[in-house]
Length: 481
Image (tube, rainbow, N blue to C red):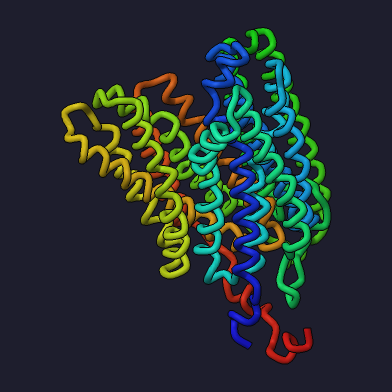
């Protein structure tokens, strides 16, 4: 039996997953086009609006870890459907909110929908063989992430069509209705895996288990930045004056205690697990998880950070207008439609490790070039370098996720959750560097991080793709199904 027949319906499943992520991202960023309107109608300050933007990202980091554990245990069909249904509620609350507290709490909860990315990664990995994983994951992530740009382009127009001062509310409510309806559609239409293939479920929703003592120490180290990222978010809220110094200190202590408590729990659970003989079928290397996580930290993290700072950077460097600067920044989002799938396709065609190493090295060089950008440069040359950074960073992100399912199939959700969370953490850390230092140091810091990732990737080892393809059924068995 040929591969195409064995994965019959894969394009439909890829479309369903991509649309689910696309709608999730639309809901996640449905506030962005209406910031000034909300600020004016509800008499909010710039700091209060800034706080809403920050909390919108807060729960996406721990949420991706949680979603990874849930999807490995219960399957993408159940988890994605429930997430879309539940997240429509805070979307409705925010759209109808009249007090700042309502907006803040609903936005905080709504940020969890950003963790939806992880669910589709596991689903797509089940429907495509390893030699097609890169392109399919790239299409899923690239076109799904376009939901934020689509929201920015369409929601203001919908608000005008609805008319009146509540037009923005109706437009945001519509995204919630879309999430609600599609949650039902996804449950009815989606399948966790092809009929001939057994979906490899995790035994529980516990934290990721290490399969050696060395890997246990690595796991503890990899988990630390997850909590550090939440601390950076608190620091950002503290700097805007939304929360007091005393409250922020209390939250820092709570995060530290939570980390220590979880580390003790992880240590005890894993130590007991390691005292038994771990079957070879369950073994995988935590080092590979760390390398992929750190690579996504540098690639996707730098991409998000650049999108945030680029308009102001170009305005100040080349004294161009806000509209032109915004157009430059939006180019990053549009190139994602092509670059991320291209990175995945290159990985399928020429080998994931070789492609990722090449892209990391080239991107490191490009960011060094960005560090030397000044008003003396011709603006077309600055734009060309910026576009090159955009294309390569997103292609590298696609290459990273072409390998996630190759570390350990049954842990794909958890590994994707870890790697995906590192992307958000990377953006927070790079923006923190920008707030403390000057832009040229910001670009140099990204470049050096990419260079470290390049060196680390040399040691990357993944499961043989043969082990995955060997599980395909024979023609006779497939016909019996």
